[in-house]
Length: 319
Image (cartoon, rainbow, N blue to C red; front, side, top):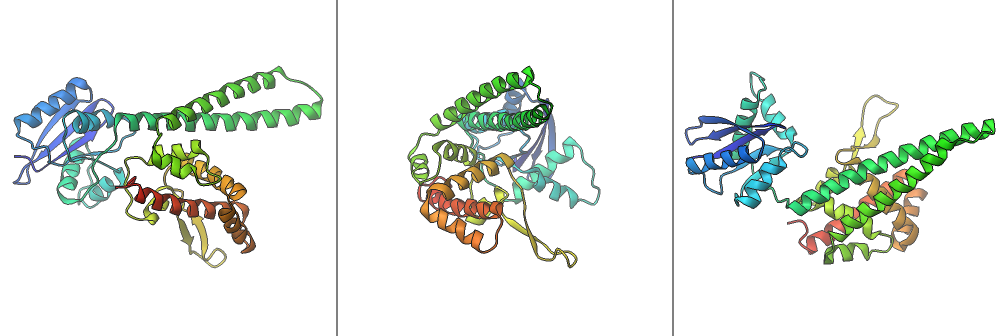
């Protein structure tokens, strides 16, 4: 009988620890491949592992996805848990001997599975593809920004020298190509998120349907019990820096989470303050209180997130 399973996932291997009722472990190593995952499933069958036993692994970019999706979708294990590495580190630091190996990490993960109440892995193949599209969109957006900055810098220098440069013309063509690719990816994301909830969010005046689709695609499968959790997850919560006297009480964004998503929310806030009377009034209220332009837009972002959160709860987007 098995009470919980911990899996330390790397690019090529799976270090697995089966926790028994007597708190001892049985350890195995498998390849992180189709055959290795199949051998892991066969081992669980031989050990009479029930479908409800917690199987805990860390989020490791994309390395954990084949295992997590195979177990949850392919074999219908209902307690696959994918956790943040910060939680594992907290347990590892609590050990007297802070030794770190794949085997020890898998045992820690198995212990976490038997102690903690963890959210179940819910990502479908569609969700994973959407995340890949968002990742590509993030990279292309960064390249576009850097190329624009480089072009502007070159143009200023060449204008002073009264010279022309074919390189800038070539870069302009590259920018057109990147813009087209960005537009295509945004259309793909939007096309794969067509639902009543997307329509309701994009019905808010000033909210682009493309930006709403990106936000929904990124948050799909996650769970937040209150608005503060969502704001903190996106890194829009404020921290007070209270050190010394000259900077006492200074408030800064925590900037946890995904910076690209914060960029999307910032663009959404700009649209809201331009075209939505309610948000426009809120923006000018913040400006009149002495807030900087960016601080006021961030306040608009948080206000929008509150509306998004309650709409999501009403539409059962967050379970």
